[in-house]
Length: 272
Ligand code: ZN
Image (cartoon, rainbow, N blue to C red; front, side, top):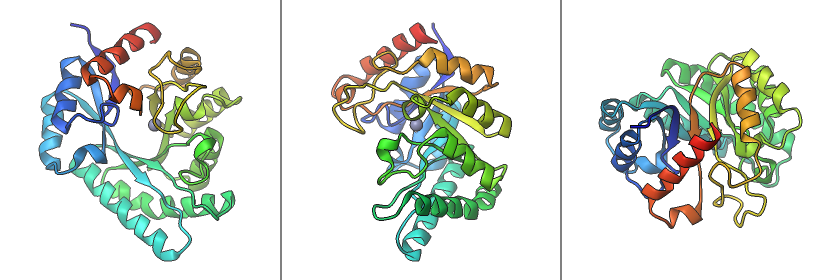
């Protein structure tokens, strides 16, 4: 049987599968790891899920996702911290070593205000998260989401944030969908690695003709990302973790999920 020890899948990729369908479906194909979305955990016993993941021989990577630190009022921002504390406890119960953060942006605030609130939010949780054994990972998002999802819109800004926080429990989740267009990507990946915060690596593809800003991501090879080039940068920078496939696709979700996953593996075999 083929096996994919360096590959992990985000459970939101196979959106309509239950937690145990994900675990079984990934393990059966020899996939090495799993990142778990909170949406997939609805109604699940977290300790039982942790055990299932282990029994299946999968490595648990991240809980997805926390963040959304920005808000116009102190109360909004406090509530965001509470929600993140809950996510940190969930990651701990699931024995996942990291929590991915979509950092947030609030309409009506300027980018500097968003950045500052994100800095304060992560800064106030970093120690606490460390005590629970959960590293906080900033995922820079493509600037198309800068209005209401994330004020961290490039790998450079994410690196600036990590540098400013300078906390060993804060790192970066790099997703090719979000950063492929950056001209200084190799330099920023090296900076990330040298800082000790190049933690996780998400793959998919960016379709230039996408029909929906969120739900039309491509399988690797369906879009315009230089996946081989970015992978080389990651390896040359010393990245040793898994490649995690994270695809939101209304088109692929409408099809059989077993076939979708097999298509992902075909593409993975061709490119990596
Ligand atoms: Zn991602």
